[in-house]
Length: 437
Ligand code: URA
Image (cartoon, rainbow, N blue to C red; front, side, top):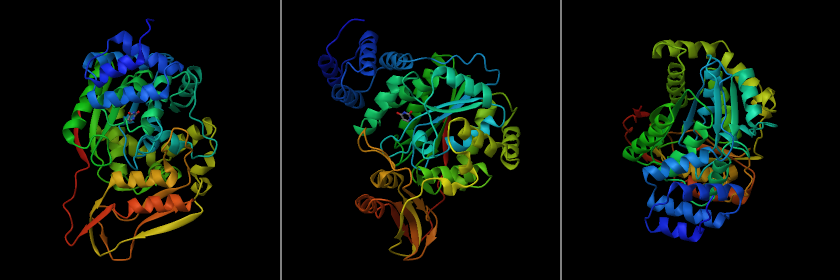
């Protein structure tokens, strides 16, 4: 491979120029191997955030990420292989109940997820709050578990999309997340490495999403659908609201607890709606249900019969976690202290801002501010009042589970600005905003 000068490539992108496929491959390869340092890659990523990538650049960048490690060969798995990925939100734990639910309906789910990114939580961090749970796989281990139990909940690793593993961690700590080409390439490189038959995307829109408005979210969705089509993978994107957190729990162990409620047939209505919408789509794309109503019936049976929660127990055990947490969530890490955030006035909640709650959770220790930070799996925020709810002055808006006083103070400073109230109830907000296929 030719040698290039990183400062020169950074400067070209900073000034709005383009890089060719060889140059982009060299950047990905060098960063993955460690010959390009974090500080140069951070500058390059920021230049991409500001200047974007052309469609040729995006195709070459995604391809280089995809081939930075092993690409799975799942041809030995007879079941349809369908995965789901979200562009990221606050309280967005949908993947955790959805994957075992769909696997229990006969679709193989080879899921490669990410860690917390910016103010959003990450599936891997949440799963690792289960004592012993490991998300690290070689390609052979991945295929073996998928053949065995029809579901893998993995992360990028040294061998699977290592470029995304490194770039993702760097973006988290350098405010270089909200970029359509960086999000699209990060998601699609992981998903294309999974050798899928089809992919369902949940593109989040709103204050707590990386795409704040519908137009940008549609562009991101179209970009990913087109990357899938160029690789022969069917991709369907649903656009869903992220102005307030999904469900009531934000944090890591907190979100596992709420996911278990969904797998047991309960859980908050907004979380259940999004989970069922995406699960239905996966069953349709996997060809195991002829229409939405049949897909729904099959999913309901998997929930009510206990098959979905059983599959979760199985995957937790297979990945080294303690499966007893499924029946006794008290075995999950818990904070030492609780603090109540109370309403300053009576009225209807008109805003429970996802972005503010997300950053408050990061300050609390549920996310990272530096690559090296260790998250605290036990801390989190349990919401008691969301948009449309009536509250009385002094009633609890949220319970904060905390372990470190300074972190609590930082969290509360933000959290106290998250809610707004009015005397009239606000109109009901839409949860599902569109689709791109
Ligand atoms: N999820 C990912 O995997 N990558 C992103 O950049 C955003 C969400």
